[in-house]
Amino acid sequence: RKRIRTVTLQQLKERGERFSMLTSYDMYTAEIFDEAGIETLLVGDSAGNNVLGYDTTLPVTLDELIPLVRAVSGAAQHALVVADLPFGSYQESPQQAFASAARLMKEGRAHAVKLEGGAHMAPTVEHLVRGGIPVIAHIGFTPQSEHTLGGYRVQGRGDDAERMVAEARALQDAGAFCVLMEMVPAPVAQQVTDALRVPTIGIGAGAGCDGQVLVWTDFAGLRDGRYPRFAKKFADVRSVLLDAARTYREDVASGTFPAPEHSFES
Ligand code: KIV
Ligand code: NA
Image 1: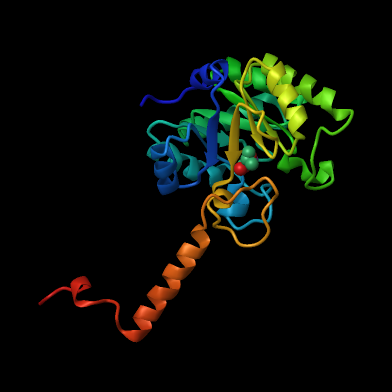
Image 2 (image 1 turned 180 degrees about the vertical axis):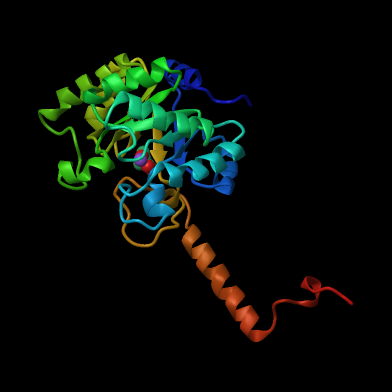
């Protein structure tokens, strides 16, 4: 298998083939998802609430994300590795965005970056792409703006549908190689996908997108508590680890671990 590139995703769209993205924040998940043929890995700022112990993605910094990007890009042999630009690292100016994205590529060895925002981010996308940095534009529900959006809610309903198509088109025209839609009504995401030349990736955006993305801790059932409607659990890794940890503790307490085969002779 060859390395997946941005043009590979474009070719998949043109052939009507769908592709997958999973988040990854460390070398083993990157290795496993890569071996499974997952086309793209996202080192998302969802690391904030999945690795770093924050409530949201807002506190995540470039300095925190870069080592994770480095771990994933070092382990993935085929997948296209995309890194999120953290909140506050790109909104000020195209120049600020370039400096931040360049760090994700130079220090993190990312192959592309993702940023949140609609048509107002078009000049930034254009500046990055001109400088040689492939960009995914993330629209719909954009978690970094949860405080201006009024919480976690579906975007693009009613009159907002037409605007969603226009924003996606503006980002494509600015040079984004892909548009990612989060929590957008399925018919609207379908409309955007049909309107664009470049591929779309959806999360909570229905089956009409060219690709799908899930946060790996949701997809693998690692996390405790409530899951969003769109997060299908493909495994129950949490219960596997819980059982293993309990068994280990019991075996230590009872003296059955370590057994002779785990011990050294003198
Ligand atoms: O950070 C992340 O995991 C994301 C996905 C939800 C698309 O941005
Ligand atoms: Na993100």
